[in-house]
Length: 323
Image 1 (cartoon, rainbow, N blue to C red):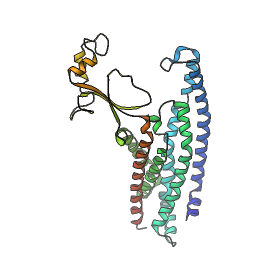
Image 2: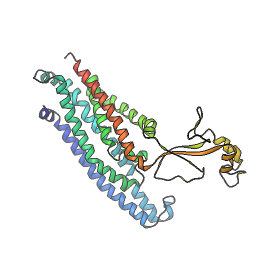
Image 3: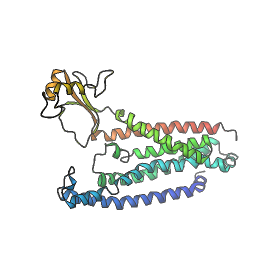
Image 4: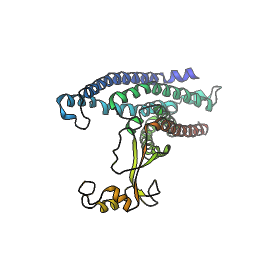
């Protein structure tokens, strides 16, 4: 059954390997160029805040950024596209070609037929994305030069990409089994996958691991290595806004206290004075780089759980088919 699955889908498997190799070569070449550009940038003591201080600074920065946006999009899209391309036709393609009827007349059961096909496809998907993961990590270090905990780098670093790919794969298989038309199933998968990814990234990921919460001065500089989530004035004794209040709710109180020069040396009162006068303190919530692997594990587990739910729905749908 495993050999039959390979023979039936070998063209798309081979095409996926070729696409992955092409992307790997492209990232290696452009990543090396970007790393060299950053080396020039730093060797000339250029400022990240004022890159136009010299022609060398400007040209090196331009070279470092020339491919970053495109490559980041390619790295982020690969797990989704690979999973959908391999998953959608796995069952829907057999239904459209009616080859499933031949398989079911053999000694193998529907469930074993389905699980074998899914197992081969899932292992193949995970193997390709997992093999590219070290390259993605190297590229983010070479081109982005920012912490891996930052959302833009987090999605293409570590092992979470494998979970994204397996979720996309099972989403494709499930909708293919339900819709039974590969084209329509693929069209439905793209917005669903995007909504799930965006929703988890914006609303669930920040709280998957309890963030670090600290009380600091309002003038404390913000570092570049932490992923900052929330910041604002809150009542003394609290580390989060009171019920019904937002993080920005007390900003107006402090602004009115400081007077017309709010936020400058011309203000009537300092921020520290206004904090004490109104019984407030300034609180920051952030995910430090030390939480990176814990967040990777938590988000991967969430996507694998969703993939498992889709697997159950697919098995149930196939077992209930009448033909």
